[in-house]
Length: 51
Image (spheres, rainbow, N blue to C red):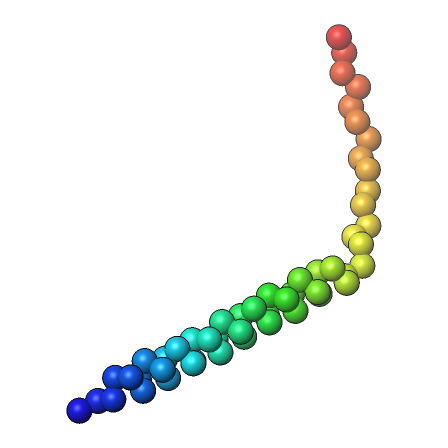
């Protein structure tokens, strides 16, 4: 007969590990975004509106 307790514990441990990997990946991407140089912005001329 299958050891359901051990199966459950294994699933929970592996799920926790997967969650930690996803959290770390998100934090890495956030750090990459925050440390990226600011983009060069160009202001385009505005058209004059007639009353």
